Image (cartoon, rainbow, N blue to C red):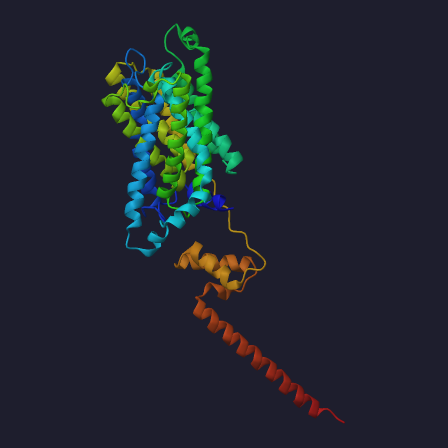
Length: 428
């Protein structure tokens, strides 16, 4: 299946480098660094901006209007990118953005409607969570999504985790729990001083975006040859549609009040920055899911917790306890352990009907052109029962095969000649 092939190619290794249609042609490690750094900035700023958008603990604007405007921002960005790519001088790039090609790609990427719906629901939950918890707490609770994602990756993407990676996920849970334990004698009272409805929202806050992330990665990688900008365009179309439906639902629920359709009502400079921040975060996420890994995406969100905590303390006077410092330290150790224990890639299975030349080509691609790669191919072919001369170049292989044919023909002719001499020497 295509999604499994691309998942193991770019997912299990922590990113396969952004290239191909719609890619940027950077090395894998460089791509991961850029993605994680950008994700830390945008995700770390989000709880701060949401908190700054509240007035007397309430939102004066409709949270769904922020989601709608964010989708409109991303939709416009995708249109601009597609416009410039369609004007490219390369014929192969132009062919991917013709009306017929776009319509064909839209039908092939219809699965993107599912994560678009889930993201629309999750964007509303982000605002609701800010009404019950502090920004740092929301960020640390959000890190629990990685456990749900690990289970979904095992079931949906058939991904395998090593023992050390499972231990790393347990360390992540411990680190988050340490941060959530309040300091002082009123710890038990503080833990219980939360509305039961808040825990219900927390459950959906963890499960809905986790499902959306895994399904988004599945949908993007299942159509890996489609430009990521074109896939973003399709998803943002669905996002606009679902958020408009939510706005219209609020309009009906309020008895047809036209003021509920005013998507600019109650907005401020903080909400304008929030809209741009959410849009850039969504655009960056698509590159994570297409070219990297959902686990890497969530671990980068964990790193953003440090930025959120420090900024929250500086801007709003929220205290950073020793538990926060210990929890973040354990989370960072967990991240290092998880990505240091990547499972080995499964060897390519050999088919009985594969030709020797195909085996040589596969060894050339995997082993490289150096002496070490050639030696590895030489040993591997001896183990597999293949002739040792397959470690040579194709031209040398043909020359060696020709010489072997000539030697065999000469041996047969010599044997026939000896047989005739022996026959004449026998008495009649």
